Image (cartoon, rainbow, N blue to C red; front, side):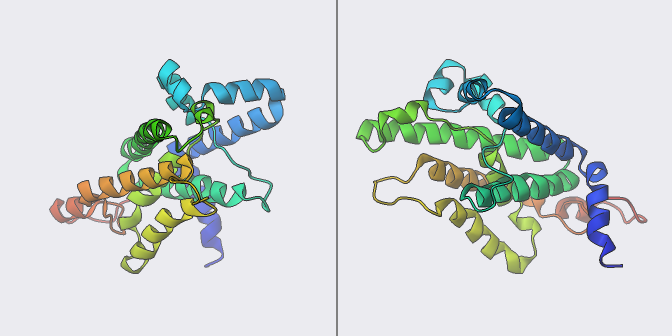
Length: 240
């Protein structure tokens, strides 16, 4: 029966996590659209418009912040590239796995609230870091218009916020992994690492902060939070 479990999980995915499933389908569709459907110049123009760089955050912040969540920056096919592991972690683990599990356990509203809080919060905090770094001459002025979009900050926040849902023995190694992976390949010759590494660390910090602020996110096997399970009356079997 064991080999049937992964297949059952895949077939049940759309029903158990419908909002995440729809979001993943949309991300795959927009990725295919800009990669293969649009002319290269139009695709580049679109991505630059929704990029969350300083220029766009000043000129059209809402369009940039929301538009950036409609695309992911990475590759699904070039498995030998350095971009593929980051895509696997953010899209594969962060959204497809952990955001889906958070939707099942917390509900779609709260799960995506955590995702958006991480995306928006880390983006704005990173913008502050960039402004301060520019004043010190630590970043080149071209960073104001750099191409910077995607779901990775929100996914990173979800990865951190879901740490308490793991077995006790896995929590510390997982937290270390969440904090360590953005630092892979970072150039430490400058006073500050690349701003995207800083953004991912800030997103992780937001996720851990949300976890500490709302300890009831420590769910049990029943799919309910520990607090709710302690206060609800004993009942018969129920669907999670």
